Image (cartoon, rainbow, N blue to C red; front, side, top):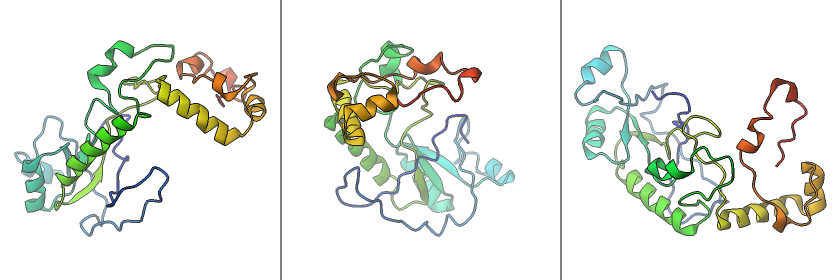
Length: 223
């Protein structure tokens, strides 16, 4: 069981074939071994293969695998215990790890390493996910956590706003397709932008100081 900010619920239901972001996700029936509420223990300072009897003594029969682990996968096959795959997307792309150190706690917009607007980054993610998902194949796996405990403005400071050129261009395109006219956006934002090309993304930090009890109902978070 992981601490606050856990993204255990960020599961992937994998389907074959190439997909796009806007493709519908087909329903996948739950496996027969997931027919009841089950706690999947994050193995901090424990080893399920060594501590199986201890787990069972407190009625725990589920665990986690980090990325790919043939030993634990085989244990799951023999025991029938379900598990989830943590860090299925590794670290360094979604969870930046040490790559984030130079840009953490910046109040201004910064370019995020491995921008998620870069097709090369997405291809790397797909490759990692394919490898880690394949590594659990044939075992009682019930979910895949892409990342680890990221959040906006708290905890590991995940650099949630990306100032990379590709990302900013995509943001402006998204706004134009959503609002259709700059006049409509300005009316919503309370701004006076001359055009969509003039819009810059704003970080959580731009609003942090305004998040006060007496501001509720008055704060415009549209931007």
